[in-house]
Image 1 (cartoon, rainbow, N blue to C red):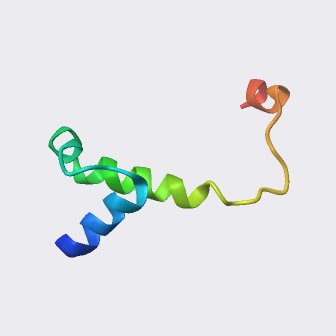
Image 2: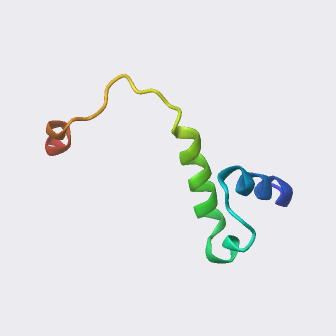
Amino acid sequence: MTTPLFLLRCVEIGISVADLDLLTIGLVLDVWTEKLNDSAKYARLASQDDMNRF
């Protein structure tokens, strides 16, 4: 990943340059990945019973 691409990803998720002093590259990439997962559709969501069994 290049620096311009990293900065573009930051802009896409609303992270300012000042915020980058407080965050790691890994955290920024994790947030960006989770943003992409927000639109994922799941066939079945886990219930409380599923979590208890887990």
